[in-house]
Length: 103
Image (cartoon, rainbow, N blue to C red):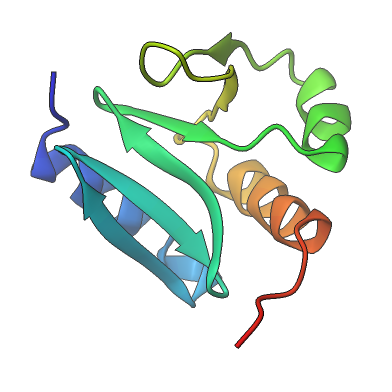
């Protein structure tokens, strides 16, 4: 099932305070980037984030569930998109855990 562009708009609005958020459509879903780093995506109208070491530690304090974005994929963290501040903190932590982009 493809994600609804309206839901993507909602997610982007919730993340607007972060700045430097971008997305890329991919096979009916949307990959989400922060600072040019892939931090998660919108899959079946769910906002899922990469489970980096720091993200897992932070998510554990909120008991965020893990969900599979698509068949054959590894579990990702289901973001509480209604909690903008915590989600922003989580995204910053994920980006910090990821390697720098090569040019």
